[in-house]
Image (cartoon, rainbow, N blue to C red; front, side, top):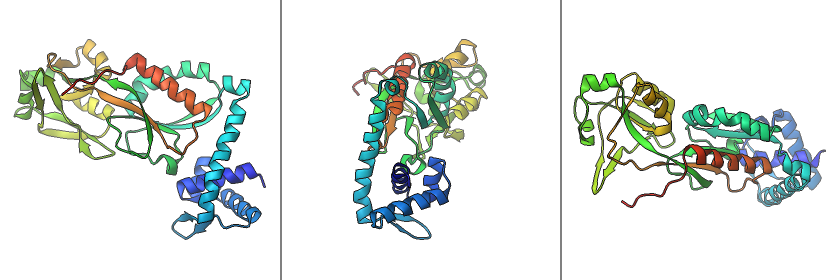
Length: 308
């Protein structure tokens, strides 16, 4: 029995609550993971897991052993990365999930420079804004926009997206140029409604000017939970867009979009990178998170929040 692989398999089963999911994240067969855990239990002469047809629960002995195992695995990883060659060249597989506009416009175009520096890191990139169970799905970290609502994660604020209100020239010609944000709440105007997939709540459309604050609650013909889909709907003239400026910049320069209400302010959207609190921050994960933070400093640096 390979004790390291057995402990790693056991830890992943505990984290995912499933032999099948653990096998998927470890790139092993379910049979292999089952055998490794059984061999570990046989060596220890202790039952670590209670198995039913529907789920796997850790026993009291298994829970105590798990706490020791994750510390041991972390120490082994530290021992490897403390070597000079490993410190200079972090290596291994990372599973990361990021929003689709961020992936398309910021992260992926910058990856050649990342790989030039860290050629031995392999990224499995999920592109979404959905709620991800990091432990169950074996994801190392996520990048998310908006305030973090999952308090079970360790979150690091890495940037702030400045926001603007945009519409196409064709939309403005058909429905009129709104002189005040409140006009967007009235006919004939429509908005492209964005809702957070992880909460199914609509994005709060609030603008401020001096002591005046306006929250727009307009009608919509389309509601989306993806930034790229929202941009496509706005470019098709389906409504007024609340949009991060980096997504609109190219379209404004080409004349496809017009920025509205330049004398009004929208609170920036915070961007976070988050990971599970009991997940050891390996060298590869650490350099990736630091790289994302540096990338955000170029494209969307943190800004001081205005007092309301």
